Amino acid sequence: MKNFLRIIAVPAFVVIAGLLAWQWMTSGQQQAIKEQVKRVIGKSPRMTNGTPPVAADMQAGETGLLTGDPAPFGFATGPWSTVAFETDGHTVRPDLQFSFEVPPGSDTTLLSRQWSHAGARSYRMAPGDEYSPAIRRRVQDVALGFSAVEVGLWAWSPSPGVLVTAVVSIDRDGKQVAWFGKDMVIPEDTVRSGARLNGSFLLRDLALEPTDVVSVYLWKRGGKEAFIDDLDLFFHSGEVPGRKLGQAFPLDSTGKAALGYADVVLQEVVPDPARFSAGAPAVNTTVDAIPIGGTGQRWQFKPDEGVAYLLDPVGQPAAMLRPWSATSGRDITHFDRVVAEPTAEGIRLTGFDVVAKDGEERMAASPAPMAVTLQLAKAP
Image 1 (tube, rainbow, N blue to C red):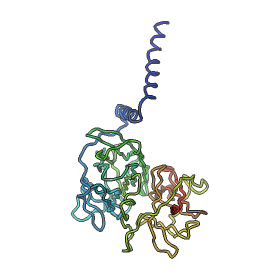
Image 2: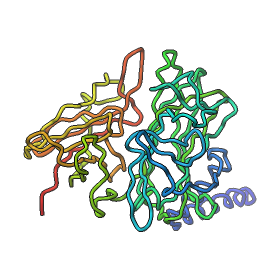
Image 3: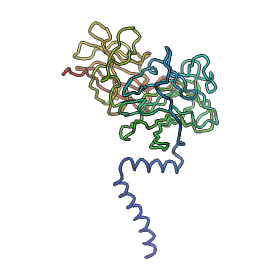
Image 4: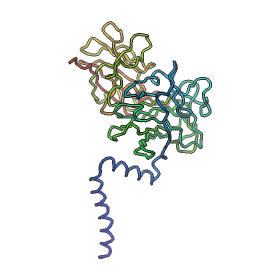
């Protein structure tokens, strides 16, 4: 019996000591142990290494940005991809969008016309491709007070059961500091509409250094091919870049003077469960100008531009509105659909993603619908 008690006591002592040690560890030490465990059990993707392109060397044109990243990420499309801010001798480019509609002469080896969510091409991950090339950036080149990364994409596969993970990895001096992943099993989709993957990764507790390298790539399992389209990548700062440095980049196409961002007060609220819940019919985005209660001004979101405007009483754009919540690290305009409704002192915004089910568009369960109230900040 004594020997039996000794056998039981030893592992019990080890467990208790381990629990006490865990409580004494810093969050950084706990994160490091978690990463080691993931690698041992095969739940962590490979470590990535490589030199990020220099942000100042990227070439912006009328239709997008030559990024310097490996194909198929060598060209980012749309006005968001060309936004840049200069600060402390660095060019900060916080947003990238990849439609895979590339200029003539571009490397199209990894692109395919077999399927696309929009446009003519998508990125094809062949059956033997477990990892995509990585998009790499130094922290100082994408954000001021780095707080979060958002990744969104559309995916389709002719074979069921293919698992795709959007991975965000942080490296320092060639060693992996942390990684984050969002999984999606591509559902069987005979109508070829594809499925949406959205991932939001909070980084504000990692104490990142300006020269740390953040890498974003895809990890595919299942041994079958998959097609990726309309990939969005947003690097969030703790503040709106450009606000303290002068006028913000003019994203509108009216040819008028550059518009800055309006100061707003944002609060996350619970979405109306009777109208916004998983499986409910997907209503359209609100594109009309909606009154902002108590102000005489209006909100108007233009999905094609990816910009929300503050309209003055005569209907002219007075500023841009950015409904980004520091609580969750998410911008509500990054959802597939955004519904706007006036309130007594502001406006209520509800965002949700869309999935195709039985030939109908439904609200997605993941990510869950999100709602915020937005008010214009009072002048001091």
